[in-house]
Length: 335
Image (cartoon, rainbow, N blue to C red):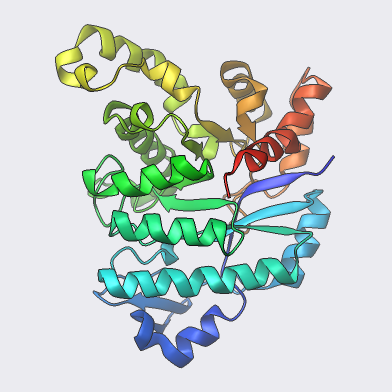
């Protein structure tokens, strides 16, 4: 049984050297901070300091072996998506990133699969890059942020991208970014502890009530951190769909929210086997996939151990979560 981790971040090998050498071409520059090097994008958005292990493949493989993970679906650190770049620069940036990512995957083909990045600042350009990455570069899906430079995922400009993702039937991993912007969540690390799961919840709610999932039934969304609060409030969403339909956009979607959530997969990064057991019971084992959030300290860096600690989990369900579900998703990708 091959074990797959769908939630693992990286910087492709050679990315930082390219930033240092040709940063202007891609709207980037490396800057020194008191915590290490960071990336500043044209327009002024600056990432937090880069972790030295983002592009350390040897350390990554050692960590995977220790965690009993056979294959990682590696994706960008979400801060490196570059959505704030001007359209043409963003298109060039995404192509460069994906080509480097494809090279990293090809050099370790038995251990890595690639989730591309796309220039979501332009929905049509993002669709083109997704098709190229999947059909030409061999990527198995895409990672996107929960917002696009402040715009939500039901923005009409994103329709070409959603159409391409549905056409390809590839996994779309949705990752929190600038969580709960404008709220006072800087204290107590609440931007991560509460903000990240809340951000995922808001994103999938926009996709549901904005009709994205209804219009594109072949979409394969993957929500991280166990889906945020969506599983636990799904009944409330159905209630709103029925009781205040004039406010929830019922006229725009033909399918109940809980039925639309049945098209979503959820990763295991919940940090508590008891809560993970509830997710498996609610969603069904066939919609839960292993995740680690490697290499961050808030991740579950031993996700197989966490799954093993889930009480009374049937062997067949365990195999689905460890790898069977990912293999089914990958088999459905239309290349």
